[in-house]
Image (tube, rainbow, N blue to C red; front, side, top):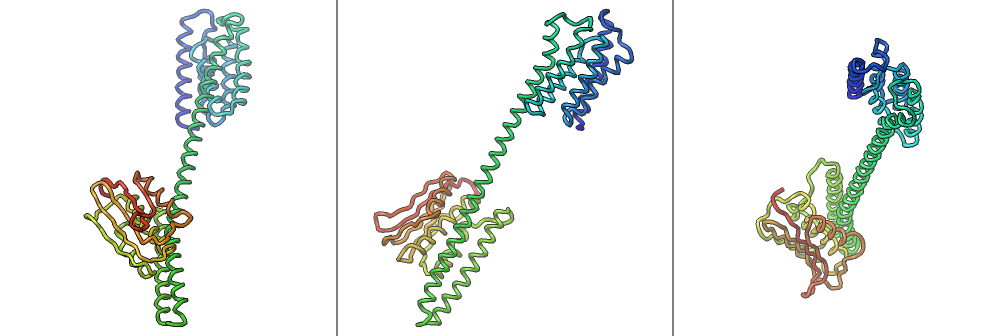
Length: 359
């Protein structure tokens, strides 16, 4: 039982007792209130203490006590509202068919007092107020239940959407990290195989680069998964020197150019910028015959502009999540994104991301 239900039951019981005593002095038609009448009036309210836990049993108990009270011709009054609370409860907490069935049975039992109570209206007129104490609260209870269930379904759907978005975000992060690492490792392995027979000492250098790249990729993957769990900072544009250094070991000549004063950015913007550069350089490594790229990062008061370009020479952006993933990152932050050949023979990835304020 909940404290609120117990308190409501006590209040309704007290109101029923006090009102019965007051009405006794205002009418001569009803039976004079006595100790049994007070007990029955109190009982109609006290049984409501268990209304949420056992709605149907509470309604049955209330009807039994209330009908006995009315059959003994004690005065009408606020005691009738206990019946309304009981019917509201079954409408609020039970399926419609069960609530309606329980209420109709309870109403059929309760209206039998109309045949014996001297103060009741005659004929069908007596059914009107009796039905009103049952049907209206039942309808209100059903509407409250339906609205609450609709709100819960909406919350559940919103949670499912957030979970789905989070899964897509994690998939994108893993794609960027793993794709970048594997592309670099493949390129270094190809170099090692090519040099193994002719220049084994150079092949050893490539194999060491593979080891370093794989270690770095694993570390970044662990960091990414740790970020998902909320226990580590996300990578950002401040790590571009390390990224370009790794790409240089993988065989891509990278020139990094920072324009403006480098500053702290919101975490989402910083991560998006880093992933755009990472994915763009990975595409150069995987698809471009000329392993050379220029990375330009321009800081302004309200945005950060990123441009990654390389000689086109038939380069393709490739299939998969790379370019679409970058575009989605940028547009989700309200920025602008483009990728494609330029008039001067380059393939360029360009992103302008709003970045008002500091991180």
